[in-house]
Amino acid sequence: MKTFSAKAQEIERKWYIIDAADKVLGQVAVEAANLLRGKNKTIFTPHVDCGDYVIVINAGKVVLTGNKERAKIYTRYSGYVGGQKVETPAKIRRRRPAFLVEHATLGMVPHTRQGRAQASRLKVYAGEEHPHAAQQPTVINID
Image (cartoon, rainbow, N blue to C red):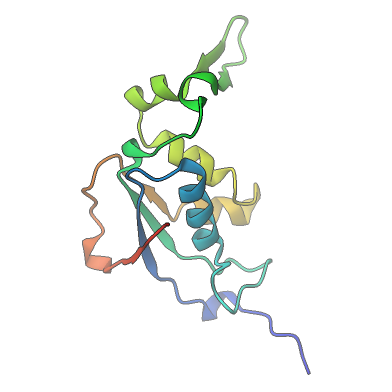
């Protein structure tokens, strides 16, 4: 018996939609990352990009458990002296609500060329409206 290996030209890409309203951030990110990588498919091959497109709506209504809304910090650094910025999820949610879901999901895909290709198929929207109705996405429920 031979081991099956998927080929890039044989991959069928589907569209999925995840409603993140009142869902835990980590659970939404895990589901989105698995769909982006293609780990839900029987033909999953680690070195081939077999993932699908993922739309996350209501990203602004995602929930963080415990005290993370005030205690967790996101840090970035400009490279200049005194250029370190520290923000809590509450501040980021006001400024850019979709960032929390994007950041958590992209941290769960590989940090390689393949991961960047998978990340380009992630579409995150703060509200319920999205411009991808023509693709007829399948709804994914997170329990």
